[in-house]
Length: 264
Image 1: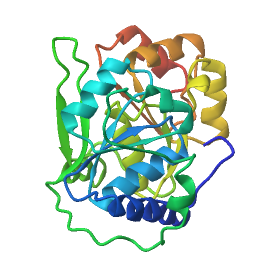
Image 2: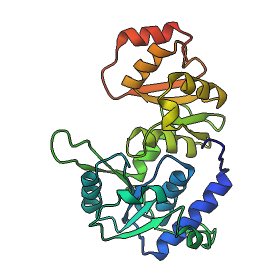
Image 3: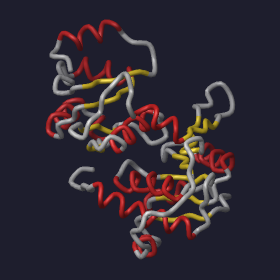
Image 4: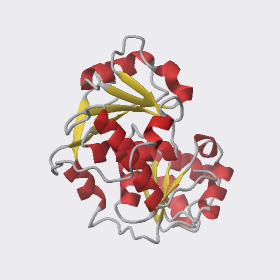
């Protein structure tokens, strides 16, 4: 995350402390926990902590309109919301759950919790997270994704092999399903997860430099963003081992252009 790094040991310890804190706040298997965090190491710690505590996470994009955030919190009946200090203004006025700031007033209490892995009774079919459709055809619908589905997506697959030597970029918001592949694809295979800021994504040359300097091996992009990158910086993906894209119809001209320009 920029200059900030976490080892697996540090990630595990921080997640255990937050998980034990959440258990003290009555999080039990099946409880939904809202997350309103920017892409950061704190986000990754929080995702893992919620699962360790037995709950399921509900990612809330800070860019969403307040009415949509309020709807998602009410629809999931999330009794707890984890936020960063800078995003507290995003909290709906009528939200009656408990709000905890991971980098603010609650940080000291969380840090005092022990590092022990909590013992929880979690089964593969239990919810891991709830993600919402866009609502473009009506009311947004919450899709409940179980633990088994995450494992099936990124472990022992027939479409990609991820090893501890890989470096996977996270370019997706946590509320976009591609983040599941990025985050858990890395962590469940012992690879390195590299967080790419929104600012870098806005500049194709800077993004290209980041892919090279961070030695990224694996990347998922929306088709539209891929088309834009290929047009702007020829050969931008040449240093990758795996490039995945999707979400909409493919522009075959851009793909031919990509393949002809030092493809991954």
